[in-house]
Amino acid sequence: MNAEIIYHINAADTLISANDAWDDFAIANDAAQVKREHVLGKVLWQLLSDPTTSLVYHQVCTVARGGVPLRFVFRCDSPGVRRLLEMDVLPHPAGQIEFRTRAISETPCDPTPLLAAAAAAPREARELLRVCSWCNNFFAGGHWVGVSEAILKLGLMTHSPMPMITHGVCESCKESLKQAVDEMKQMKRKNTPEPADQPLFKLGAPPSN
Ligand SMILES: [Zn+2]
Image (cartoon, rainbow, N blue to C red; front, side):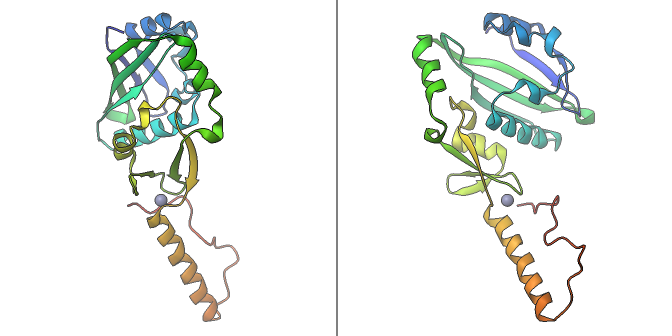
């Protein structure tokens, strides 16, 4: 991989442009099915098979759309090559995002054992990545942190295979839930009839932390 791969998605996560290096990389990796003619106009998530990678990229895009550029290193092996890549995720106007990827190291290796080991790893033997189902923070180094910190602390994108996701509730969201339950109890104590149509917890507005 010589040239930098550059591509853009729009506010709807649709792949709207990719440079020549995108196609060169696809061809070099026997992945002609992801050449531009086949993928431009598709939603980025349709091109990612792994749910963990997909979730992390979703979070990365959310951060970028908040105006914060990110840079991280990730692993992208192909048969015969162990590869570390570096990616810049750059916010653009109108919800567009630019991705720039370059190689940091490429090491030839025996293809069979590496890929066979990844494919053979039983799901339950793979490391679990804890994600809060409310705020989507990640559990890293004993704390719940946002995606940028998780990528750094866990080396999240350099795993092969990627860790499996397990959902939980972080301390901050747990506290919010507890408060909501306490309020409900107090309401009952006051003998106030519960409005039947009011949800117990207000979903869709996870507390920020
Ligand atoms: Zn949370």
